[in-house]
Every structure is written in C-alpha cells, then in structure tokens.
Image (tube, rainbow, N blue to C red):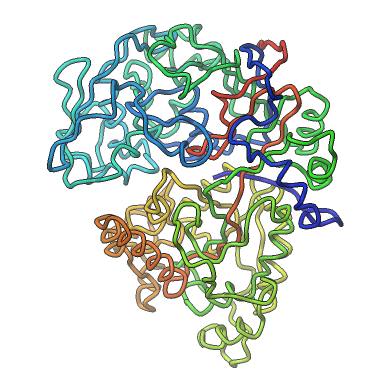
Length: 631
C-alpha cells in the first residue's frame, strides 16, 4: 500500500518535533477548519498523484491498493456493512451500509443473514435497484480464478462452496442464498469472528452483472465501474450498457488510468439510505490528475491550484515549510497509517534461500538512514518487527532481534551471520564471494522516497558482498512484477503493507500459502509453497532446489491457531508468530511503521482521515472553492 516522500535536507525533522504536534492532525477530524466555522457543501477536491499504482486496474474484485480502497468505500461502492471513514478506533467500527443492520448470526456462528434497505440503486447508466443477487454476484466474481481476486483467501474455504478456482462468474455459490431480492444469507464452513470485516472489503460490494459480466479478464471492469455510492465516475451516464459490445467499445470517459479520474455526484444516490456519520458528502466532486512531477504537485497545493494531496507526500524542503512556518500551521496532517514498509526476500532465489544471508541483511541495513530519507520521525517509527503496534497492541516495546547502535546497522553481526552461509561465503570471512551474490536484481519504485533509498540499500549490502542491480519502476509495474512468481524477483523495496481491517490476521495473510498466486500474489517470499503451486507457476526447478535446502518453511498451522484463539490468548499468539517470523523465517527487513502524510491548502475547510483505507477521508472533507470539472 502506498506512500511516498523525498529525502530530507540539512535540517532534520527531529529538530522540529515540538512543532509537529501542532502541525499534525491530532484533532481527530477538525483539521484545518476554523473554530465556529460552518461546513458548507460544494466545490471540488482537486488533487494529483504521480501514478495511480493500482494493483488490479481498479477492478474491485482484484484491486488491493489502499488508495483504491478509499475511493471505493468512501465514494463509489456500497457494501452490506462499512465503516464511518474517520480516524482512530472509531474508524474501525463496523456499521450498516446496504443492509438494515449488521446482520443476524446463528448461535453456532455459521450463518449470517442480512436484509437490504429500500431505495438503494446503481447509478447511471443502469439506474436500477440493487438486489441481493448483485451482492452474490460479487462473490461469484471472487470465486472466478481468471479474475484474480487478490484477497480471495478471506472467503475461499470460509464460505461454503467458495473455492477460488471457479471457471465462470455465472456459477452460483452453494453457501450463498438469495431467497428474495432483499435477503442474502451466507453459510460458513467454520465460525469466523471477523466475517463482518471481510464483508466490508471492496470486493464484496454490490456488482451489476450486466456490465461487470462483460469482462472475463482480470482488471478489465475497472474502466467501467458502475457506482452504488454517493459519487460516480464522470461520464457514466453516457455509457451504452445495452450490450457487452457497446460496453467494451466505449469506456467511461471520466477515468483514464494514465491521465485522470474524475468523480461527480451520483444522481441515483439517496442520502436517506445512508448516514452523514458514514458519508457526509460535502464536495460536489473529486478531480484526480496524474502528474509525474512530485514538486509540481506540492507547488500547486501551495498556490491553490490544487486543494491537497491524496497519496503523495511532500519533498523535504516543502515539508520543512509546513513543519516550521506558522502560516502553514495545521495544513500538514500525519495520521496513524497502520502499515509497515519493508524489504522482502524471495526464498526461491539464491542467495536468499539461506536464512543466514537474510539475517545478515537485517543486521546490516541502516534503518536510521532510511527513516531520514523518508522524512524523519513525522513519517513513522523505525520498525523492528512485522505487525505495527497500532494493529497489535501489547507487543513488547523493546523487541528488536536485529538491534544496532543508533539503528544504523551492525557490520560485525552481519558478517557473523554471513559466515554461517557456507555455500555463499566459502572462505568464512563474512563476505559473500559466490556468483549468486553478484548483480542481484533489486526492484524498487521510481519515485521518492523509495528511489532515494536505493543507494543506501546498495551500499549496505555491498559491505557483506551482495551487489545489487537496481530496476526502478512505476508503482503499478513494480507491484505486478514482484507479484508474478515466475519472474523470480530476489529482493525488493517497492512494497509496503497496511492492514485490511483491524486485526493482526490481515498481516499474517502475507505469509500463508494461500497468499501465493502465480500473478497478483502477496506472499513474495513464497512461504509455504507446495509442489503443485510451483508447477502451476512454472518454478518447479527453483522450488525443488530451495526445498532440498530446507528453505521453504510453512507457518499455515500457526496462523490457523491464532485465528481460532480469542482474547489475550489470541493477542499473544500473534506476538509469538511475529517473533517467529522475524527470528526463524526472516521474510523481510521491516524498516518503518509508517504514518500517512497529507498536505492540504487553506481551501480545505474540514479535514478527516479514514482509518480503514489509510487515506484522506474524501467523503467527510469540505472545500470552499467554486471549482467545476469538465472532460
């Protein structure tokens, strides 16, 4: 999940921490509003981003980017249940959306039944009532293998008959009943205490078959997404949905993945079916432009040509102005991101098929330098393990199995680990001398701050004999590259992970065998890969070699146990899993527990943050401009 920033200048952020408290959005939603100022509807939130970075081309069945989650859940789509789209613990509470309440659950926890509200419709060009079958169809798409539901593991094996390997979205799922247009019942294979959270994910939102059914390839529906929420893609009313031929040949004009996304009010949205606590819907629209120049984005925010950022973070000199200039007080918001940024290792590729090499890299990385590149403490704390403390309260605060003075790396300990990787350090001097350590492909993003991290990582790994061959890509291409198993990417720093919902299990999924997908997977280390999965993905030779070395651990049973536990036992189970991953599996070098940085202009009269998506809450912000949109 996404966040960017450029290296700091000479003055470190730590020197202005006294100002940060005032500059950041610790006011839980009042943001830049003036006391006593009434919030008015109207205007357009104008923003820009270097690239959308979508992982599934904005098709909700497969899309897995936090920015997209915000656009879906806040503005475009409605689920049976949703969130209030506010900051903090209140933003993690499930509330009704399409459904009249949060459902009726059987005493054994295996059956969930929901009744839909009256008066909720799909927007143009369909203009029709949403029925229970539209929700069932969303799950039929999740079940269709060709559509690559990137987090389908939340439903496969949980809902009866949903396996994730279906051949067609037209096939009904035995565990989902729609006895009438207003009722839907789910039958589960086992009690699943977080099932409501799963129902609030965008892939589970209502989807109309007459448009989405025209697309049988992963991602294709994203260009013609039909709204059920308060906003729609501009030009949706001009889409000819009379046949699949006309749908495919005339994508909605308000979304060009390389240029812009323009969202306007959905005329078929009835506010009486929603709550202002969930969606205030102050603005008349949201205009997102692609601008590959980060400096230009923030210059336009300062000048008033844009109202604020979306998922980009400011260059260091600009950030310093917001942290030190009293005139800019309250316009930079640093909100808890519930996310971890990390370097990943691929266990199928030498030299990272050796745990001692992975430990050596953990010891050598200068996390303090990386934090500085990201912009200092305002952007988050240095990470020493996988699950952020905001998602797993109670984790030992002093835990760090790879501690080093000043978090700047420890060469002696790194060399001590490398010496134990005898296949790669043949003379025992703590330096890798094998050919596998030369010109190792390293994937990163082409935008700050990741691009500014590359020299740090290169320099650090060179100290233990690993020379990297960097390949810097735009966000979307970087994700699709590392998520394609047969590309065998050895190491990368393009990825970060934010919680899917308020439970540590949403980090554990990164290490389950079910998180392996030949394309669009999230288990980049390939932990728990089976021979069948290796064959399907075309990496049998690499899998066999790694397996022979004992390099493919499996933590599925540990994760299953944690999911079955409850209360403090559950918490401690997740703590133990995190520690086991860090010490005995070592899939990552976690380096930052990140905050989400948003900068706004004074034209934003009300600011709010959405804890669910980890982005600005576009359904609750307000602006005082008179901007309009056109294509």
